Length: 140
Image 1 (cartoon, rainbow, N blue to C red):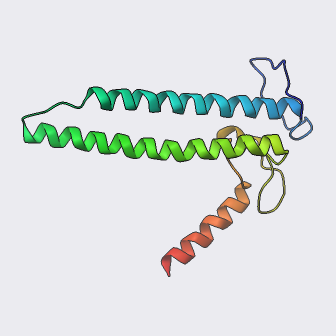
Image 2 (image 1 turned 60 degrees about the horizontal axis):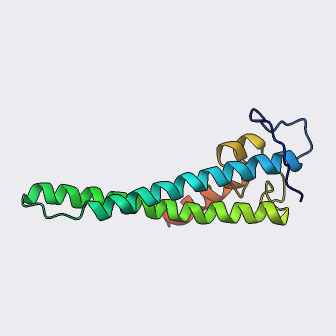
Image 3 (image 1 turned 60 degrees about the vertical axis):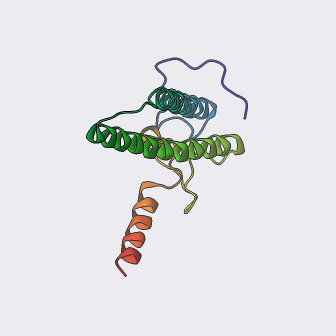
C-alpha cells in the first residue's frame, strides 16, 4: 500500500468509494495515530502528576482520598495501555492489507462502525453473536 500524501482535512470515507482504497486506509491510519498520540500524552501527564504528587499528607482521610484517586488513575492508564496495543494491531492490519475486514466472517466492517471504533476487528453482527455467546457461557 502506498501512503496517500494528500488527504483533505474534511475527507470522510464514503460508501460509494471502493472499500479500503488508499484514501480510506490513510484516513484510518491518521485517525489511529492521532488517537495513540493522545493516549501517550495523557500517560506522560499521569506519570508526571504522580511523581509530583508524592507528598506526605498528615490527614488520614485526605491521604485515603488521594490514594483512591491515584488507584483510579492507574487503572485508567492500564486500560489505555491495552488500547494502545489494540491501536498498534490495527495499524499492522492496515500495513498487511487486512484492515476493515471482519476476522470472523471476512466480510467488510461498515465504515460507520470503523469511524466510531477504528480498532474494531469484527462486523457489528459478528460482535453481537460473540457477545451473546460470552453471556451464555458466563451464565453457566
